[in-house]
Length: 374
Image 1: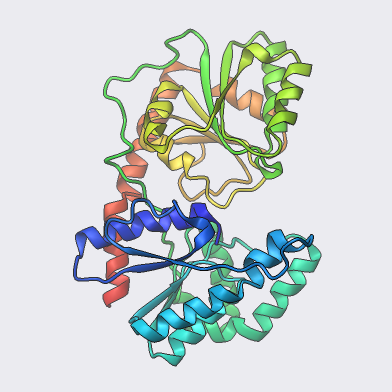
Image 2 (image 1 turned 30 degrees about the vertical axis):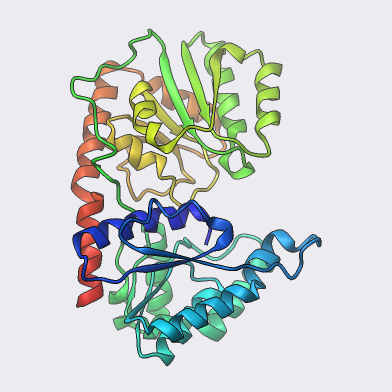
């Protein structure tokens, strides 16, 4: 799976291993993902060698690195054969690695846990056909025999509950939400915090510049705010292939004074950034999870997200606002709506409490421990 997912579960494994040193925890990673093991203090990261059979071809970026990574297949088989794990966990569902992990668990009499990230089948017709074939050949066998299905978003819970229902009513009980947790020692609010100290609303956007992050809608929304003489400053954190295009558009619209480029920021600085800003906005067309949302909420920073972002961490109208994805007018109106000292403070406090009660990493690590031993 992609590296942010690995980083999230690395943090879970660290918390789990710290609380329960009797567990021997290992995480298999491809060598091109070095540096995403969250410190790996209480588990062993194993970097498997990777080969790219289609290197130099147009298919390298997807097929070469994922579907046809033969050395990864061999490395996984080898590790399982040598270490005889009691439990094997796989994160993606629509993946040959997932079936390989399931098959290895079945052959070695190990428990198999699936922690899928998918909210539904792929959107493109060719990939949807491949996913349908995967379901037909492997789906029922994998899902009916796995010990637990622990999706990490409410949307994924609904998707896999429906899928399991088709295979048998009793199987639906296997599905439980298991969200990514927040380290409350790292992300916590500032006592006595005040908003709009600069006289204008300071907005933070944590998103690399990829098409699905939809910076275009954000820029259009700020253009609308400017036309209404609304005072705000937007800090953009991230890099990516569309960054130059986005800032060119900002210049064309005469919005240079409204935007600030933060580039890359060390993860250790994220709490300070959340607290320095009055609001976090995530404008993505679609988003698997968007960890900046619960992190900001844990720090007492209100959030506005699009309808493409998971609802796992938010309660619309209570601790967050939601705008229609790709609708800059709606985003601009939501920003102006939340711009009230009392509303900002209220959303910030409720967001912090919601994360503390439901998404504490230490509590989730204990819950996961119970899944492993029961």
